[in-house]
Length: 173
Image (cartoon, rainbow, N blue to C red; front, side, top):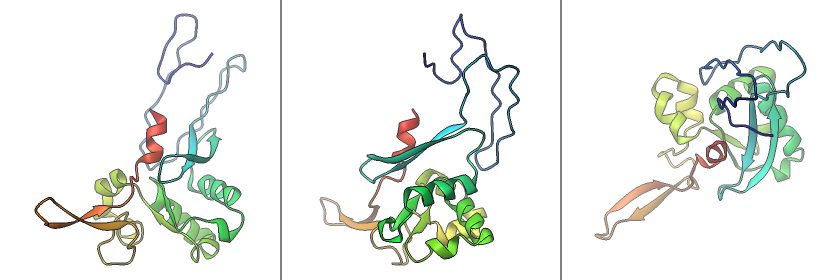
């Protein structure tokens, strides 16, 4: 039987959950016994812009940048199949990790890491790497596929995000 997170059923023991800040690694959970089913930290998905799931995996203890990079490499082992843009809420952390461990040399010619709109709006001013390299809608013309020009009924031009960067977050609800 599957039960939702934080759902306490009468016949199932209650589980104490700690709230983990979004950009920090989760502490390892010690199990008291092995007679209950294992719990996974999260399910990571790769979705097309239309919302179709391309690939998914389970992360058991944390959603670390190195695990995300491995998942991307396992999903896209051939450079020709890699997407132009990879949108992930932790893109700035994944970018930092890939720069530090040398993985960026393998990805820099094929893909750009961008953050989702919610993440960008919440911390772009305090993070230079996020602002400069992970912007989901740069207005400097560096990513014309991410920003499109639209017109109102009165022919007033405005810029609009071309893709819903929150698409993979909908699966978690």
